[in-house]
Image 1 (tube, helix red, strand yellow):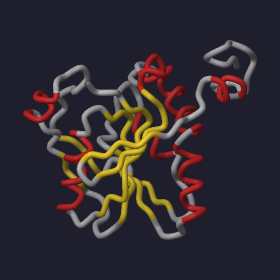
Image 2 (image 1 turned 30 degrees about the vertical axis):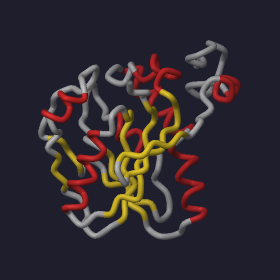
Image 3 (image 1 turned 90 degrees about the horizontal axis):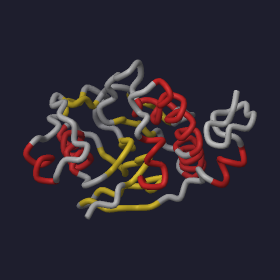
Length: 192
């Protein structure tokens, strides 16, 4: 197998050198109302990788990025906080054979961490990609939550732009007795 970045022989999707030089997560924080959102990468730094999400190659890339970011994050989190935490991914729909958000949440499985796959699903399937804030506000996701109630969760999505989706998700979760501690995203888009 070869590294997808430098094409040198590697047993992993990205060789150790590329992981350190190109894909080192740099956590940033944005706040939307009372919701804190932590992102591992700036969108523009990994845009080409993120655009593969609905392709067969995207499966490998998202899985590798999750192992480099979400997995170490949750390991450090549970080392400092031993309560049971639930993970809820936003709209884990299967497209092109896999659900890209499910790849992110799957890497967070650990002791005291319970992943609730496909429990927060959108009825509205409109794409927000490249759309205005006005469009996003006029076309809410219309989420349905079928997961465990009365728990604390970390909300997970792949990309945060305006925060509209995350805020709507938090509102639905609160209506179901779920407390959102914070949200994690793979990348944050600088919105102007």
